[in-house]
Length: 389
Image 1 (cartoon, rainbow, N blue to C red):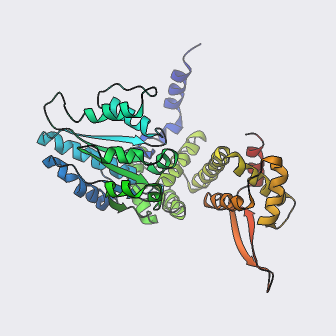
Image 2: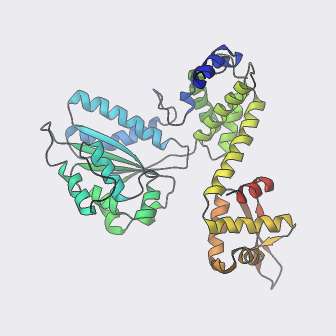
């Protein structure tokens, strides 16, 4: 049998659909372009807080806030590349290490990863916390270059780490000489997870990343499209449509890039000569379908049971009040049900995810108010996903 990948490469090379893409990589949200449009001001603010390191002074701690897809990670990585470039010219010993807190969810794991990046072998488990901390701090006492090492640690999605493991990592890093932290969070209230003594030690500078507008998203997509697509292959309405749809999704540039990439892939699969607005609309349906499946599949069991209860009542054409929902939920959960009060937390979380909506209505004088709950995703998709998990 010949190599299947080699065969596919030949097929793609000979196919008319190769007219669609030049290079898909610029459509990946992790791609770092030469210029980060509409985030110049935020990059300049990061640089303002980091510039001290070029004079061998530990820079300020920084926190970036903003919703998903507002350019926080890209801006921090862009600033990192610029800083390392000038530090190399000035012969300043600086390291900027990026840690995604979805991959490293405890203080031990983060410190072990930093030690390994900085040339000290630390196992992923087995040492005491004290041993890891001491090994990490020892790196800053001596180094083979005879120069003072400055380390900036980028902690992306820090709220996940803090929620799981507490604020010990921030205490350790901020109490280590020559170390500063850049934290990235989607949530303005993440500091509720930090004790006052650690917050005082952090003493960070805050930078807010607002959502992109439709025009800004259009600029971003136009720049990436020029790198990714064959000239003239996009219909005129493709980028405006992707931008408008993403602007409605709270200005999410990742969503805009996913729409454009998926639209191109749909055109590719159809052997179409052009990427059209219809491809964008189909891409939107595909992305939302996959997003709902992913969200439902990763929900905790109790929230899945709440969704199942909502689904059952919806199929019965019932008006779903929180009281009625709780009764149905208890029937599903048997002896493993949570309290009625806890159900309200689940309802709020599911509403934030966009799977349900709630509407508070008045029953009239003396009858109080009640929450009416409605599904906001396809019933069949929900049913299929819940019963195949």
